[in-house]
Length: 186
Image 1 (spheres, rainbow, N blue to C red):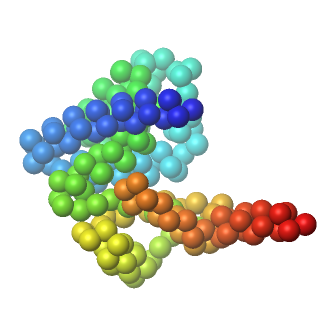
Image 2 (tube, rainbow, N blue to C red):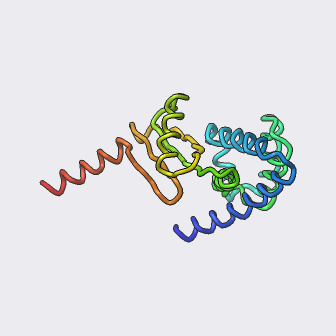
Image 3 (tube, rainbow, N blue to C red):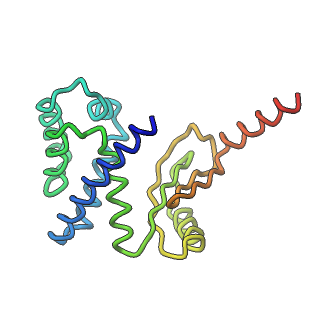
């Protein structure tokens, strides 16, 4: 599994680096980030789209047709639209979530920021996001952009990935630790 993960991350970094270079050259970094975020929201909101992206069963032509239709309906065009069509043509859709994450990291580094992936049990308010950014800035020593994902299965708390560090204050993890401790006692 680790070998597959590093393969996906290598593919994702190469594609994300190429998209970043094109976006920088076209001076459309903000637009590309916005469109990638919109596509990511579509993927996270649709089990069928997740299946299309992950499944090797669909042919390259089927994936390109489906992605084109989705992009047109969502009005995602320009660099991101062309990029996703090329990714589909090259049968690399399975790596799109990692490509989006890699693109955000590259863009954040370019701006002198560091990117943090935050998983929360429920959506964070603007005030909570601001407070979290300030706290993470104190830890990282630079401005922090946060990418928030909602996962109700963590029950409460947060999981924060900042560079190579992960801080897990989720209720699910605390309960698992408590369960393990109680098993050792008994």
